[in-house]
Image 1 (cartoon, rainbow, N blue to C red):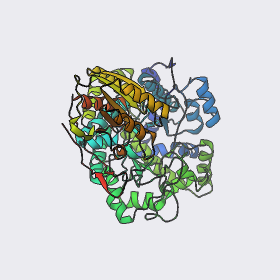
Image 2: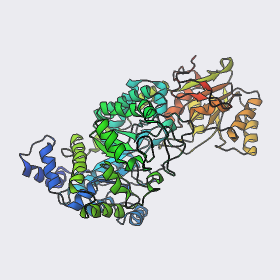
Image 3: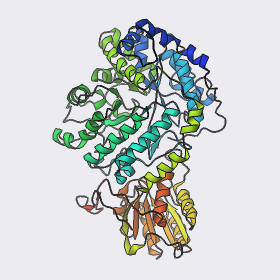
Image 4: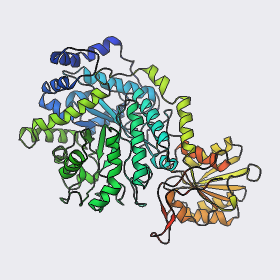
Length: 610
């Protein structure tokens, strides 16, 4: 998730009008052959004509969405060329498109695709140019995971919003729609037209290691409303939203990246708990839905993951829920989909189940040839491929990629990370911070009585290209608000010596802010907070990931939930601590007692204010 790219981007110039016209000539000619050419998006007959002119190899390629290393489509850094050769057998994105004719490319920070907005726009243009210049070339559907909060591939200076659970704490459909509208406009300006967001999972398991704060909450009605609102915002800005992870990943204690989770919900419970947000997304006109690599025996007792389950993807999603948009797999490199079948079988079985886009297989050559062989040997029909290709082309057409595949640098300047967008993110964040404990009305801190503030705590790596580390961001924000704050990073597992150092520093402070990160019963973070409280200094605990930390910190006189450690959420927490804004967030998930998980300590909807 971390973008380590630095220095010159080696950007290519914005394509000229002549280049654009030449690159799109192949598509234009194909469309004209099917009927009169005009400025509008191709209609169904023209899209079908495009499919009819594809070779089988081109059809197979259209089904794949692939990663590729590098900041440039044609001239990446040598290290990225080496990574591409090792993993994909090509040097560049342009070579990837020429060899496999993939229909989509996914951007990652760790693949050095997302250094900064102008470079991203250039990369997008380079990808489109490389694809459109091929015989029968088609525009590419470029995607990324920009959920905001703890999962975002495009960092500063783009606008970064609070994550889903923070938005759930705010509870505003208008804010969710605004988030989608602004985030979608910025992605589109950079040439990214499919966002793998929002998360539609209902997080009812505090031990969930992979969803957690990526979910809007535990109430299916509230989650449904916010999912629909974000979908409207994204798609109103011309970016395909993607509800994930169908049929629901909110009640698991296994991470499908590294294991194979099982959801034990009955069919009735699934209908009440997991299905509503996906129904709401479909009703909102969602463009794409992502599958989950997990087993739900009540929906399909075959033992297959949902990604490979025809009863789930075709029987339930297509036929029962009436969805006819694009279905994309979660990454095919995840263990949850690889544990039962080999990498050559997975893409074939996913297509047989009803999938349209095969995302990021670990071995593209193996997967691509497996699908090709399955068609040649009759396991898959060419008509089955055509049905998925048409869905993908319809989406590309809807997004305007046939009319206008390129983006302009001026659009980046006008749209990405503008002052108005950044201010909107701050306003939304101010409505999300949740105050759970405030003994003796400790908060807000007084600049007169608590002028010297020590900020200690966990400093996980910045999740989305934000400033970091969290203790430094909190201290900086408090300094900006008139306090004299210093930061002391103690980490997620502070040693006895580190705790002693923090306790000594606390004696020279008027108040202590402790950033906590997923505190458990035996966590050294708990010992840190207890020993800080024992100094007699006022201690404010700020949970910077899951809000369940408060149950493990009964000694802390004040506890806040910030739901993430991105700048925008930490700044909001600082403003609440300083009294510049009143805490307005309400818990979107229940917090159980630490000593008796069957008992609820703080229910959904709980939250104090000043």
